[in-house]
Length: 476
RNA sequence: GGCGACGUAGCCAAGGGGCCUAAGGCAGGGGAUUGCAAAUCCCCCAUCCCCGGUUCAAAUCCGGGCGUCGCCUCCA
Image (cartoon, rainbow, N blue to C red; front, top):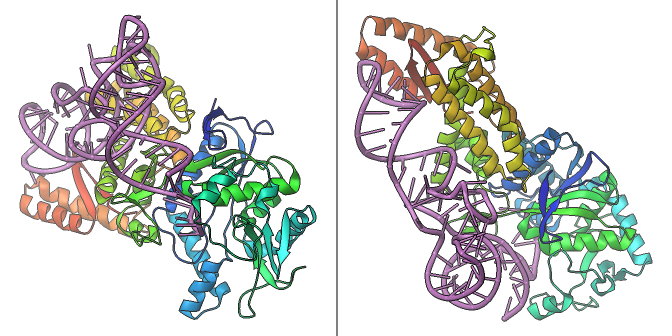
């Protein structure tokens, strides 16, 4: 039974979707005014993992991740670069999809864009105005926070706490400084749509409410995003949504911890960030994914070379195991009746692995625990292999299959990308290694070592093992 | 100032009253294996931020400190 920490309740709860095995899952997507940085990638990867894990457990998941392609940041940035906002948004939306693909994030079922939902947004805002939750002042429409009695239930604050914070910008036209914009009037040179309040564009929080509810329904099961979105973004989403429907908007609010860099939150405004695409030049996707899954998703995590290098070594360890097993001839069926004691132990470990794994993962998506089960299996299988019981080699095959099965939700260890799409490079490499092995037969170590070290410089690592030479590429 | 999260080995990181003489990974040391290298295997490497308390029993619960981070303003 899966348990998730629900920000709304402030504690872990049993996860039970509204409709038996169907899960309606919304995850906050990017505002496409720039490439996303490696900290932004955390929720993308972590919630991709959660989605896959739900599917792994047999749920039917409907997954929506929006693209905010209309926003003041886009307008500002477009002006700086001297291009149209639409053009800028399109450029970065494309880059976003490319980067997601490189990170191995599965495509969402629905990928709504704000500009395609303006009609629905206007409808939603109109409904709020009719109900007395929204009011117009000179073409802007605000949400009347005091009207919504549950305001603050997600972030655990009261309106009075917020007031005393006193950092809320005072705009004279608002009835209350805490009220937030649902709709903003646009200057003639800004993007705008005709509405009952004149030409304008959606406010800052409304798009998520509308896109979530349009694609998934009035009440959704999971809404996920970064911890820094709890207030005001998600708080306001709740207010807008529930004020209109009178129904609960979302049942489980899930928030990931932030990525830190040298002790501070990585963010665009602090300037201490690295683009995800730049990190991917250095490290392959599985290293990045492992890096994220090796810490519980709610904890803060420090970004550093060292951490990524560690992750890389760990990923290599599993691939090394998979590779060695694949090189065994394990055609024989191997009867389990004649297993040695150590074989029986290993078989037992393999057979109990899924339960142990789910036991970890069910506890608030504890991926470090889940990875522990996977690595434990690798360790024990390696040990078994070293005992040299060749008659039981099919057990290693089984262990490998289990490792891959359990790694699937994490998008790990399913096989590495080939060197080139044509396969020619691979053939040439094989040929080169054959020649090198002929040299080794003749004990021409000097030339053989030179080939190995020069290949290494190109990123191809050669290993000689049990008479066979293998190679791995240090890139994806 | 208000609200919240967190503090486990050299580093990363699970665990959350007795099975902990604390998973797993990385790095390091010693050994086996090896043309060399790599990989693999074996062995070694923590008493859980501090102080009080509850309990037969606490890393694990309670209270108080200290520290780090986040939110209260755009932000994943």
